[in-house]
Amino acid sequence: MPGPMKVLLAVGGGIAAYKSAELARLLMQQGHEVQVVMTAAAEEFVRPLTFAALTGRKVLTNIFAIEAAIEHISVAQEHEILAIAPATADLMAKLAHGMADDFLTTLYLAFTGTVMIAPAMNVNMWQHAATQANLETLVKRGHVIVEPGSGYLACGMTGPGRLADPEAIAEAIERAGKKRRDLEGETVLITAGPTQEPLDPVRYISNRSSGKMGYALADAAATRGARVILISGPVHLAPPRGVEVIPVRTAVEMRTAVMEHLPAAGIVIKAAAVADFHLAKVPDQKVKKTAARVSLELDPTPDILAELGRKKGDFLLIGFAAETQNLAQEARRKLESKNCDMVVGNLVGGSDLGFETDDNEVVLISRQGDPIALPRASKRAIADRIFDEILKLRLTRHAADGR
Ligand code: PMT
Image (cartoon, rainbow, N blue to C red; front, top):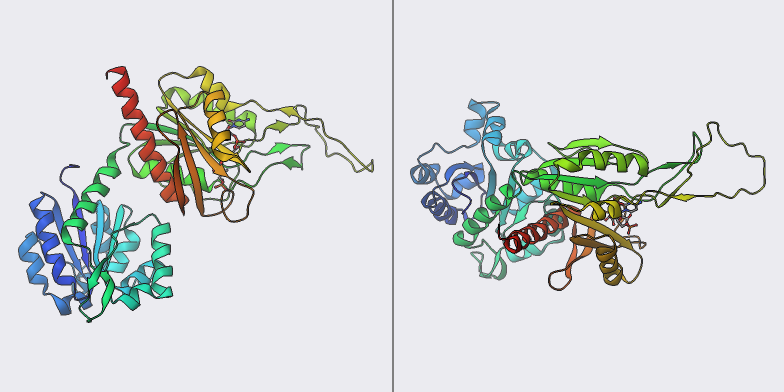
């Protein structure tokens, strides 16, 4: 049990709104503080008084928004979970596109905690390409979706679209609450992005890494309560909220930053695509185009992961393996040769996964159990799954140490 949470229960305007009253009752019974927000359409189905009586709090509606112009900001800041049940097709579209024309949608944009969405609608509306595209956007944003159930719908049709049972939604809220705090007290050191290895003052060698995978890991760790130190090569991404970013350029600079911050870290994740070779002595001046052909003599860069593996103390060491073939075998080889606790195998080289993309598909290799294949999902969702497995490794290790 995550303990009592401050839950915002947002009720959309669908016939399933009556089930949210049962959800509010369940959450209250579990000891949570529940603040209900209703859209104007929801008020057509259930009266705010029902929720006020169940939660002992004034329900926030559009009228309320007019009375207190900036209330949505303080309400957003005071709560940990925003559970939207039922989420109608219209509401999902508004959320996906960032429209903010009423209290709930404005609150949503100001909210930084865990968002949970329990859709409910007619089967055709649910299956419509527009709704599915909006759903994909919301999933990619890292929101938790409580899938609708299948069965007889109020419209008389049968199929998926029925609001999940209030018990299932309450359980999902509990799980999300637990998840949010499970890295509290941890310091996670993450490397992300490419390195740039200069050839002269204006040219460099680099690679296709955008930093998205590493930044998604940093965001997941920070959201789950960790102190996050993100050592980042040159990327074009906004730093995740609450993360300490240390910008570096070259492999040598990345090594220095990693070693400097290592003593603080309990978990180290090397998602960066570090150049394997560099020009050991970079000319001071721009190289002139004098010869028809030039050849470069490159030296190996420091292998940061291998050095961490040799140092290996109490921290958990997670490496990545970007491979164009034999993914699982190569990842296992890196697990052994670099003395990691886990390696995330990432197939790269194709156009739609790995480098630069928003989605990824990886395999997790550790010394315990079989490889875990994580099917295609957003890098943010993959990041959360990676932390789930890291925490399991940590538990196994503590059990083995008798801690
Ligand atoms: O940044 P994105 O566009 O989101 O793409 C994500 C990604 C494909 C870059 C990422 O998921 C990934 O696979 N990162 C590792 C890339 C890589 O360099 O893999 P590698 O197999 O060459 O290296 C193995 C491991 O050794 C990596 O953890 C790497 O950080 C580390 N390494 C490599 C060389 C070096 N000199 N020092 C290192 O520490």
